Structures are given as C-alpha cells and as structure tokens.
Amino acid sequence: MDDSLAHWLRLREASDVSARSEALTRDIAATLSADEPLYALDLATGAGSNIRYLAERFQRQQHWLAVDHSTELLADLLERMHAWGTTRGYDVRIDGNACKIRGPRLDCHIETLQLDLGVLSDRVLFSGRQLVTASALLDLVSESWLRALATHCRAEGASALFTISYNGRSSCEPREPEDDLVLDLFNRHQRTDKGLGGPAAGPDAAETAARCFAEAGFQVHRVASDWDLAPLDQDMQRVLIDGWANAATEVAPRRARTIAAWRDRRLAHVDAGRSRVLVGHDDLAAWPPRTL
Image (cartoon, rainbow, N blue to C red; front, side, top):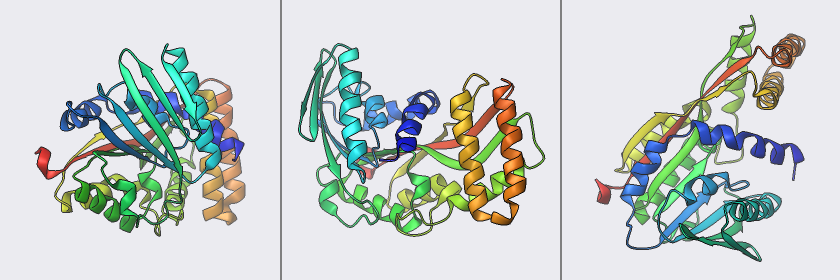
C-alpha cells in the first residue's frame, strides 16, 4: 500500500466527520426497519472511516460488507476498528477478514472483501443489502458506473448514502493570482479516467448521481458538506496543495514552473499560519420508492 494514501485517509477522517451531514444520516436511518438487522454495503471503504461514523448512529444489529481493491487498506481497516472499538470500551474480536464489535449500544459485524470495483456487474455484491454507502468516491467514477449503481440499489430496494463528493468549488485565503488557474486544471484532472467505468464525473458527480437515482425512481436529497480548513489544519492543507499542484502539472506540464511557484507561495501561507482553505463537497441520500 502507498504509505501516503494511508496517511491521507487518517489525516482527513476528522475533517470528513466535521463536514458531513448529520441530518441526512438521520433521514437515511429513518428509512431502515428498526425491527430487523441492517445489512449494509460500503464501497471503496478504504480504512473504514465511513463505517466508524455510521455504526454508532444506527441503533440496531448491523452486518457490513466493506469492499476495497486494496488488501493492505482492508487489513488497516480491521486494525483501526479494533483500536476504535476498544477505546470506546467495546468488545472487539478479529477473525480472519472480519471483526465483531459489541457493547451496550452496538452489535456490529464487519466482513471485508478485496474486489476491483471498476465495473459494477456483480449483483451478488448488492444482494440482500438494505443500505449502500460510500464516502469520497462518487467524483472518481463514471456516469455509466453511477447508473449501474442506481440500478442495483433499485433492484434491492436499498437506500443509499454517499458523502464527501468533491463538487469543484474550492477557494484559498489569502488569494494568489494563479488560484483559479490551478483549480481549473485540477478540475480537468478530476474528470480523467480513474479506472471506474470511464471518464470520471469529477466535480459533476453529485449532480450526475442525483439524476441517475432520480431516473431510477428514488427520492434524492443533497446537502453541502464542505471542508473549512483553518490555519491550524496545516497538515491537511499541505497535502491538498501538493495534490492540487501535482494534478495541475499532469494536465498542463508546460505550466509546471508557474504551478510550482504557486505551490511554494501557498505553502508559505500555510507555514505562516495565515492560510484558510475551503473545499466544496456534497452529501447525497436516496430513498427507494417503498420508503416514500
């Protein structure tokens, strides 16, 4: 596993938790039967931050299938679930590729599955699931992938909750002359093929997903879930600025010198404790017809 990815996932978890919509989570919970166990699917789960957020907010027995292409990330998920659960006083048992977490308010079984999600052709993956979730995923997938996702959810009658989807609207303070240039180049990079069904929806992901689910008969709600990174969030800001600069350079290598100068000035603002960064995201929830 790329250590920088593992570091990024750990770094961003607190920002994701602060940004995402509590109201949409409550609304989704209300669509699920409280009288039976919850069977949920978490796509591109990474190190499991989405499950950690949701597990304590669903007051019922839970069975999660956590899917990711990286076996190393899935192993990290189990380790982090163990640390997270024991810190809260839960009983945590790891058994092969699964873990059980039990306590006064939680009865949660999590099974991990290594799988390439490039094509959503396996209906078995969704079979019996009442909830399908993902975080920080939709902007990386194609419109055809999103359409297939909506079709699978409709076939199972599953509710859907997708959080922290990048929407292309970001800004930095203090301003630099090249901010708009770098943002435009980064947004163009976000629309390139990420190996998930074709050119990625990128900044249009939430809008595209909303249309796909609405066409499949779902009621759809969208809520802003922006990161608002303060001057003290220096580590997050450094990784973001480096990532923006690298992506922009890939799209426009002839502007590499200009982009590098922009990065140096932006990082100087971060180091001086005067940088604030807003990154636009959307959360999206979709209810199948039976819950309307």
